[in-house]
Image 1 (cartoon, one colour):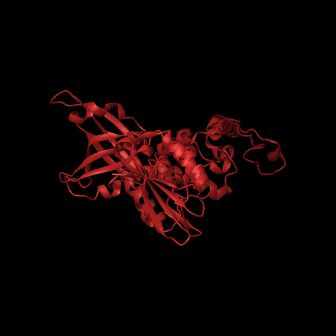
Image 2 (tube, helix red, strand yellow):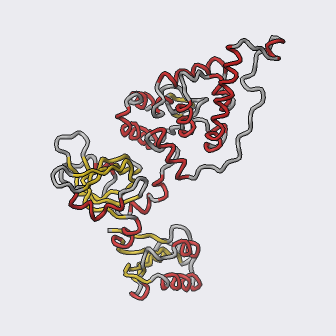
Image 3 (cartoon, one colour):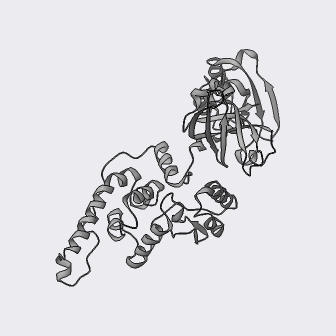
Length: 380
């Protein structure tokens, strides 16, 4: 798997394939470690049964830069902090912009959180330039006079006390540096919700024949707007990405006007689309409808299932359940599945007076009352 990943590492047009290979490795039970400046090599390698991220895969870094700091690490040992890195690595091979990408990708996480590292980077670069200028002028310090080797940084500077990036910011910068999400995914929080409503994952959709309609869910990126040369009407192109890959999408003017306000980078959507191949290796997903999760919950939810156990739930929980349901009246039917300690189950349909609006339902309160996983929505 490491060799397979390395075979795609230099081709910026094969990022989707790289993501697929990482997903395949994880599916096989092989952990792919995130970028690490003190472990990574230019290519993907293996250590202790785990795949170590190949640093050349960091967007815009280049093999020459990755080889430069791996060479510096081999000559002087592991980097101790960001200041040590900036001093020991030639800025002509690894400019400041490349160091910023390393920070955003998480390669320096062992030295502190990313917002603090980004804040201290200008001082680290300035300190490294100052020491290099001293050497060029022939200035010697205390350690030189006594024949000792000069430490890269006499006293390590503490990192500034700045707030950490939010999860959204951290993942956005990570994708900026890698072209994909590595440590987590913005959709992890929405995965169960999306699965209720989609018909296919994006990976499955990409294998379908021309003309088949699908319902996919994911996060939008690379949103671009255009005007039709023929009619002058606007349309949009974008990518929609889920946990299995990304899809090239277009929505033509006939549908765009209705859904224009939903075309925003980083928006989580559910999309109805038709597969269009036209002899392409990778299909285009032609979008005909967009829904937010909230809209999908309202329009596509067919039922809410509540799991109860005779051993755990009694009159107190039933009364509490009734109160919560009554506070969110709607048209979504509610069914209760009751099980006993011998595994026998009964499915009960609740009266219309207890039908709910999924958007207004206090799910957190229900799960505190009945337990995690007790409430399941069924989508069509």
